[in-house]
Amino acid sequence: MRDILNPPACEDLEPDGGCAYIIDDNRRKPCGAVRQPFSSYCSYHHSLCYIVCGSKAEDERLREVEASASAVGGRNGRRGAQPSRHFLKRLEQTVRGSS
Image (cartoon, rainbow, N blue to C red):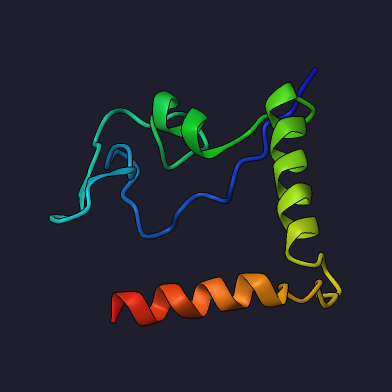
């Protein structure tokens, strides 16, 4: 059986205040639908925000995170290869041409 990791209940929300997922950033308007038990969100928005432990979605997300970390040097922040002279010259020409 797969467990779902749920965050602790949000203390500043009223018990029947509805789903807290913001659907309108300009007015900070929350969804307001009935919340899923032990969540600040309705079932739909909870599924967008949380990944089931041990699921295929979790495996895919972890691969994405590992690929991103590897591309930028991982945890240790290893220094990557320097850009080639050709690349730097083209970049400089592009910057001069756009200013």
